[in-house]
Length: 179
Image 1 (cartoon, rainbow, N blue to C red):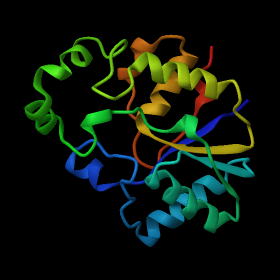
Image 2 (image 1 turned 90 degrees about the horizontal axis):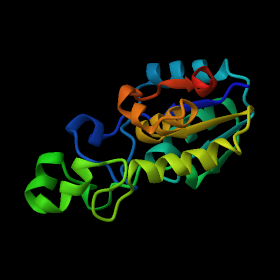
Image 3 (image 1 turned 30 degrees about the vertical axis):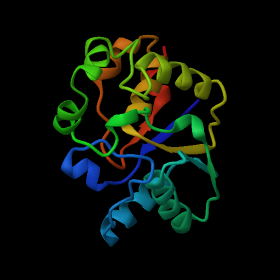
Image 4 (image 1 turned 45 degrees about the horizontal axis):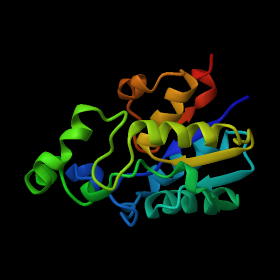
């Protein structure tokens, strides 16, 4: 069974290296990128799109939806890892502001999240729940962190989370990672 996920398009947070929040918008896509995206997705055997509730994923899904006339639904389970107080800041800025409050997260990101954020174990559990209900006919528009968590679930090891990086607009077939 193929399970297709795609990371949203580029944002200013991706370029300037700060932690993007829920309202971080997608940057404008040039016509070539838009055409390439629609062509690549058009080759997939999908009839539905589910997007994270974040603005950048909804906007990416809308580009695909308009190009292929496929309906979009919102799926909260595939939202990005909650980074709490870090959102809107670079790592350096957050370190200056929150200092020692970040120490538990930096020492053990599997069990601790940043203040008001999720730990990697939290997002792993959310990815497990998501993978129990995935559909083969659906493209899931999500985020680098969540897609890596889903891969970790399929590999049955959250410590592998840091082994992957998902590029903007990269399509990942999660079934390639299943045992």
